[in-house]
Image (cartoon, rainbow, N blue to C red; front, top):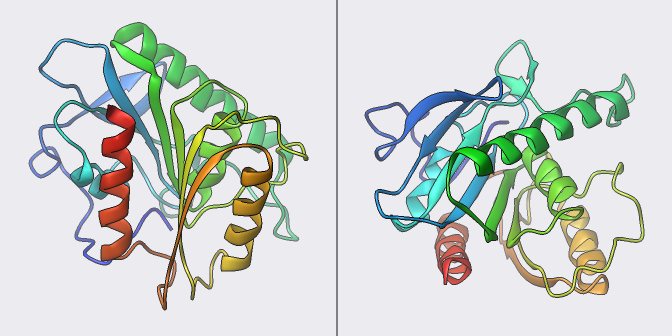
Length: 230
């Protein structure tokens, strides 16, 4: 799934996406909103899930203040419906080759974004929904960033264990207790792994919620991101 929230409406458009625009950078189609004020800007990279696209995660931009630079790139692999960051084997496991391709596309996109816009690397946050959460972890656990948000996501098996020292890196995990796509036990395990590695983990388990983000989760997301912008 691309992304979902309890109050989710249709995918965003130029008209309803809060002043955003669709652009291409380094060969990656993406939706972007650049603040009108001078930078450097706190920056949120939003990564959609399986069969999503650059519009799927834009509902999460509602939680942000106008000072944020926001970009939502489209994943590289075309699917029957939407796009994916990597493929799966016939047994359902992550395909390591396509995973590295997807991670490389994301890394190059972020580097190009930093060259074109005044991104504040110390306040660069990666937000990922579902499969996008796996990509947010994969990048954020191996680069200096200001934080990682996993919404119904998971640390992929391609990330070496144990995790590297995270030195207080802020991580927000929001997961539904009734998620039948990514089991909540995975989120609990990831929470413990991140805490043991030294991350500053904020964890919310939304009671009865499936593979989506509820009102409580959206509220916490807004508060947590506001703290990252300071």
